[in-house]
Length: 185
Image 1 (tube, helix red, strand yellow):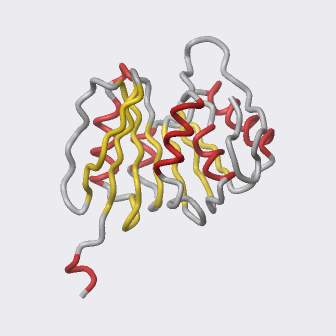
Image 2 (cartoon, helix red, strand yellow; image 1 turned 120 degrees about the vertical axis):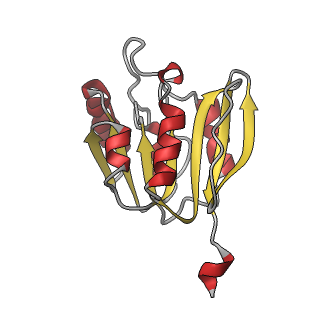
């Protein structure tokens, strides 16, 4: 596991021991950042179910203003802190707790990564909570990782479910929060 590009390019990140944390593969991470490459610089990022922290760290390396990493595992919290230190990047804040509890009380973000354990059932719940508590800024992006066969939840305006990208057994689904034309008047 390494940082692909930006300020921390090439820095090795510590990988988890055992099966408790499933890191996103480098290929999926690179594909994700190819999709959102023009939507990172200066943005506030939220990495839910952060695991190793590599998605948020990659965003920071590519110019994100800040990133909040949320995971309920103590092992993940320690791993994220170590990986932030290894990367030498600033702007990261690591919180231990559930994604659902955090989303219910947090500020708004421009970019949100959502990658819960595939079999946990948390993915649909957290997409709905993000929508319910409206924590995505206008023109913001949610990148949700799931198994390729999973049917992803629909959302209501101003949220929109966008394109899905399949990479073997993994699927990335893009959600956005678009500016309502009435809000511009």
